[in-house]
Image 1 (cartoon, rainbow, N blue to C red):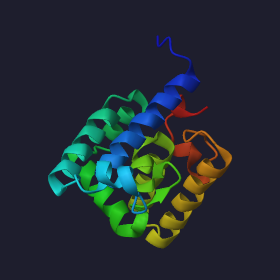
Image 2 (image 1 turned 180 degrees about the vertical axis):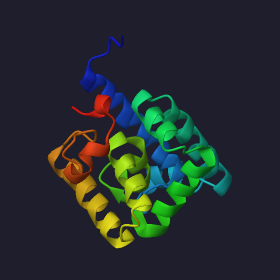
Image 3 (image 1 turned 90 degrees about the vertical axis):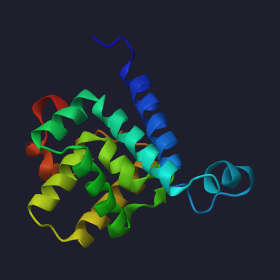
Amino acid sequence: MNLLPQRVQQWLKASRVRELSLRVAPPPDTDGLAYLEYGRQVTPSIRWEALDDFIDFCETDAELREVLEASNLDRKGFKELYMHLAAMGLNQWVDDHLVALSTLAYPESLVYVLQSRRLRTDPTDVRASLLRYWTGVATHGRDPDAARLFPQRRSHVPHHARP
């Protein structure tokens, strides 16, 4: 049984996702010290190392691990999924979220992406839905695990992951 209150756990998770996101793809509009800290020293090898750290982090999340196992998504597949999202134009920042990585870090959005790929949903629609969602999280402070993410997909979320 985890003794940390749910809000604290959510904050810790969001903070870690942001930290790793900054290492994978620093925001383009960083300036001054932030640019020096995250921009110039981020080489391709550091980005791949950060992506490996991100995958390690995701594998420690029980709900995400269940989704990864249920969909037979290994580390290579996880990296390919990240690259797919980046190629769709989702390697962009919305407030504190690097959309591609935040999408992979939460069960609801990960399930949505996996199902969209399986159903061959138009990538433009997937991109628009994810950008709308993460903009709403940033604007309204919604919980990224909220079932409101994509209600039409709710039935595909593991029962224990539902609020």
